[in-house]
Length: 112
Length: 113
Image 1 (cartoon, rainbow over the protein chains, first blue to last red):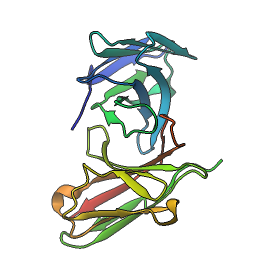
Image 2 (cartoon, each protein chain N blue to C red):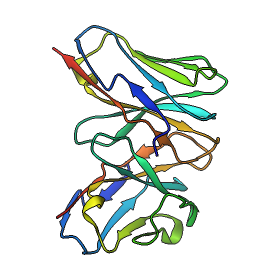
Image 3 (cartoon, chains in turn red, orange):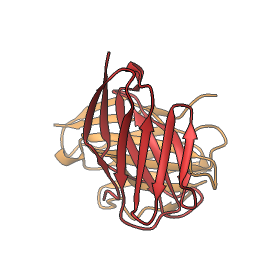
C-alpha cells in the first residue's frame, strides 16, 4: 500500500525555473526521504529529513517537513534538462534500516 | 564502488512458469530489500533481510513468492507460478545496518504473457 501521495502527478517547466513538488503521508514517521528515478534507471537517493527537522538543503535541493500537517515539499532551484525524472517521497516509520513506503511520484519534465 | 547488481535486466515468460531474480548488494551492506514497482506507481516493499534473516516479509505473497539470502550476501527472489498480474519491475536495494539511505539496483522488468 502507498503511504504518501505526491502532488502534482506531473509537472512541466522551462529550464532555469524552480520546481516544487509536495508529498503528504498518513502515519507518524521517523524520517522522510526523496528519491529520483530517471527513465530506465534505478532510484537514486536525494535527501533525508528527520521528523525533528523542519528544513534541509543539499545543493539545488531544499526539503521542508511539516509533521503537524504530515506533509513535505521538495524544491529544485534553477532546473536543468537533466532534472527530468520521476521524484518519489518515501517514509520510514522506524529509525534504522526499515523498509520504505513510497508515494506514487511526481513526473517532472524540464523543457529546454 | 560497485552499485547494487541485478540480473536479468529483462525477463519474458508465459504465465504459470517459474522465474527467479538475482541481486548482489553493495559490499558490506547488511540489509537487503526487494521491492515491486508497477507502472506509474512507487515501489512497494516485499521483503527485508538483515544479514541472512528475513526480518520483514509481511508484504510477500507467500503462496507464490519466495526469497532467500544464503550467507547474508546475494539474494534470490522467486515466483512460482507466475501470473499475468506479476508483470512489473522488481527492485533490489541495500543499506548499511541501522542506516536509512537505501541504494537501489536497476531492477528486473518482468513481463508475463
